[in-house]
Image (cartoon, rainbow, N blue to C red):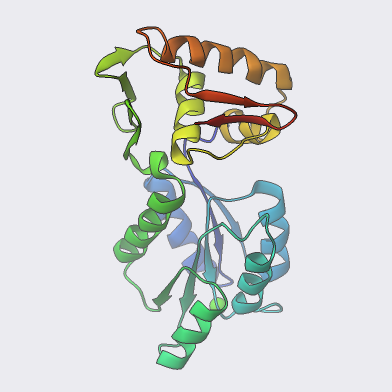
Length: 229
Ligand code: CA
């Protein structure tokens, strides 16, 4: 399973609500994993590193607030957007929810359409290519919806793997990605691929990007990995 589709973790103890949410998110093209309580949720976060978490506040055992606080204090998970769901609409709760680091807060009963919009909104921030955005880096333009890439207005031909690599780089220019991180993001966690495969595809991507001239925008960072710019 390559990560073309963002993975959403749904944490909700009420089975009917969990199913409705999962169903709607799947219909929107997301990969969905779900948990019924906090312990399961924390395990799943480590296991699948979701792109976003929809988290119920009131859970048996560890509360949603506590889960959120734990995730936001760990560097590996602090960047994952959390949308908190709560039946409690008081302003003070809303403030408390956001203070624990939740990125957004939705009051139950919520409209599924509104929640989907908020999920896309958060993903637009962290994974712009996954929600069909156009990404631009210097003279390179990547259209995630049509899968077209141009450089200085010339169309580039990229294979599917090179396309995913480039969109990963273009989502966070300047960020250094290790080979392992690229493997997880581009090939998926459940597939065994030799890390030298990454180098092969980076080579192809470089070749494609420079086919019509222009400098090589990809940087090899010795002992660390690769970065765009
Ligand atoms: Ca609940």
